[in-house]
Image (cartoon, rainbow, N blue to C red):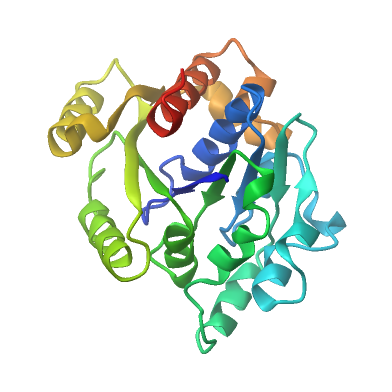
Length: 257
């Protein structure tokens, strides 16, 4: 059965989608069958993997509405072992329609149960908010991965997110764990980055990933080319960092490195 990881942070611009895409890419490179679920109405994971949204026959919008089973929305990417459940901005409208549905918190979990045996890892890219979609992602997952930008106000809102995690864990998903906190956009030349990283380590201790994701122009450029940074420039600092992150994730979830 797949290990399901929800990549989440209610604060936007912290590298959540970038982490989802690149972690998924490197897990697939390590021969793990991997599915990325684009569960953010912005649909950046979909475009970041080079998928043209106008060409899609089915998306997560159709899955949420019940028109299509998840397996009917999944498409292969151009990368071996890596599939995508794409989305479009219409997902925001679908979320509104969910509010009055019975079982609204477990729709994603039910959808993933149909394909869980087909994958080793499922990565959920959730929206930058504590929305119904995010709660669905938490309930469907084994682990949360929390990217935190190493800049001022980095930890703002994190406490609220962790409180939500505890509530979900207590009420609907007792197996949910914090996989780790990932420092992103780290600039070793600045004292601020070092200070924020120190704060993250002080607060989260061994839950902080050893890997830090640097502020790197190749990471920023890759999505505009519809590619993970490891495909766009595999020798860049950003690519090497995400490759190291994948090894840490494998170690923490499977004891493999």
